[in-house]
Length: 246
Image 1 (tube, rainbow, N blue to C red):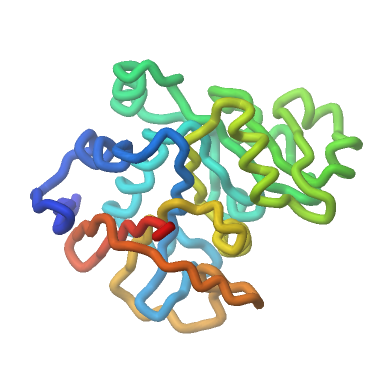
Image 2 (image 1 turned 45 degrees about the vertical axis):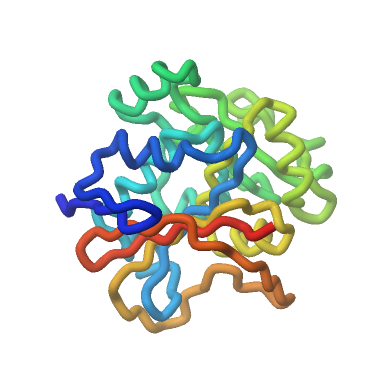
């Protein structure tokens, strides 16, 4: 397993999982963190999945980000493509959360405008906490009873899920620290709506090429200034944490 070193804001070598989580938890109570991975040439996927770009260090950072979150927000299509299962943390993460009087696991929040979801999928059927599905207002009025049996389905937009309305839904449920895991379309919408407080970007040391999407791929210009907050290194992989310069 490749060790992870902190380069900024202070130096530390071979961080363990608790240290990674403690660093990621040191943010305000209301916080939206967008955690993504990209190649050196900006590709966000290899063979259709971001997991193809990552390594064990990226997996550890993602696990630490989930450990500190109240909710994990992800597009339903991305969850399927990336092979999501039930959002159950490991024993060490559960113990870390218990020590801080947090629920043992974060809530999985899926974004799906079409509600094309399989109620028997493990990420819904075996979830340790009842998942939340954000959809359009119209779709929320016609929910399949089988889906309603395994998840709360809430409308958060007219034609598509609107990030600001999504945040209201989450905050009303005391889900304040949000770990957003994309994919690129959801990431772009969140960035354009200016609801992202931090980007946690793993830069994989590889050139991918191809027609992969990029983070923030949207027709309109976003132009948000970000401030470098922390920098981690694991071999040839960099993890760059930047916060919104508000």
